[in-house]
Length: 97
Image (cartoon, rainbow, N blue to C red; front, top):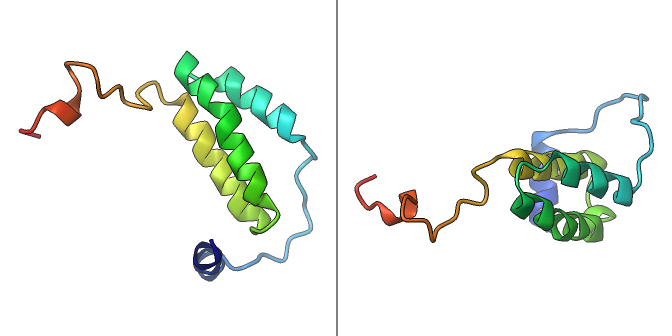
């Protein structure tokens, strides 16, 4: 995790900005992500993804935490994520791709 944080800080140096986002609780975030989920499977993943992000949030720059939250939102809003590998139409089963 330390290497990830250093890499992030090198790529995204701190900005001198005083504008702060409105406060939001982890429970509110989880509720909204579940609501935005494209599928029941996505909604079911939200709790664990938010819990994992929350556990590490105090060790990471706030912008990196926000980035991880945006990635969670993107994943659960994607109707094709996670791709059902048991499906006969799955690209994972098609070795010609």
